[in-house]
Length: 468
Image 1 (cartoon, rainbow, N blue to C red):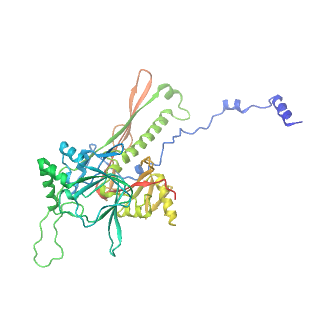
Image 2: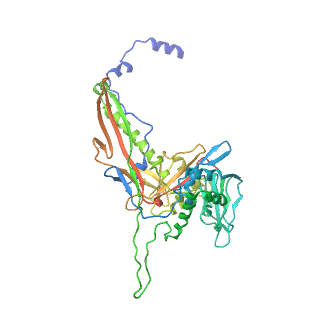
Image 3: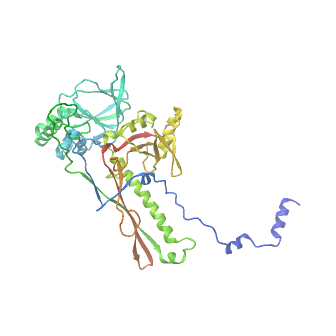
């Protein structure tokens, strides 16, 4: 008998036992709870120390500081023409807090665009500074002399940075380093003579620059804080200096941010379809998971309190070769004491791993809650997919110190709110409407605070797509 004949015979044979399709009508199917791809490890929420507030506001008191102008300059691009936003000139130390929009607009119009080739010298050590450079695009290396006469890279400046701004306050200023284009650059230059011409006509600008020139006369420490007068190493009846510690007159206050949604469930579903799983509980569980994902995203990216936007300019580094190398990670660590953790996109962690492989390095890993976490110099590198990756395949790596006692980064929340199911997260019953739909208001309150500027650092413009 052929195979085909055997199949036909099997199909015509009378059924001798209960089929599986009919048997399923009497069986209880084993089910999983609803799954959700959006759920991530959320290491930031897990590792950030949380501080409970009273009244929904946290004030960060600091010593009085005279350091100003540590921001970034923003540009507008139209075709191949680049211009600076007038108000962004207020990020320059000499123009910080200057608010005359008309004068700032005239200063912006005086900025001249220049295209600079890679390797070209922009400014030479020892020459007089006569213009301010604003970097619209590209990287510029600051080159100095080493102890044995060789060149050393003092730092790398990139998009939004500026240099030469000291000329606005000191006409006799000279370049203390050589500025060289590491890549092709688009820069805007603002000559000192143009600023002086405008200041001759604009009394407000002249008064502002004069007031800024008086700031260096203040005795400050290397962080720009008012110095505390002390005496040490003296003997006999020496006069001991008198001093006090001054505070900021207007310290920053962080108000709790909010994430909310209204969950709707039909009463028929809630009443009749609760076995073997409670429908209301599962709906709330998945909604809370989505809310926590958004909470972590805001802690990273929010323009008011997000970590990426609250890192000071002098704590932002550029990778020397584009990729995240061990050297760059060491530089990021060296900028602060007691670093507790790195945060990086998983693709950035993979890129760093490739650089370690090239050098024959094997970073150690540690066990955290049953997960193997890679480390660098003993500091864990936690994955965080909320750190954005740009269209040009670049991202950032965050390094931070945490905790109030360490003057680090802290999370903010307020426990004890009504209908709380977790600290600072509540589910409130809102009633049933005429369509028999139950409504629940799901709310999370949160924020983050950077207690001192060096608590957080960012390695920016990290390339993650280079494999060679």
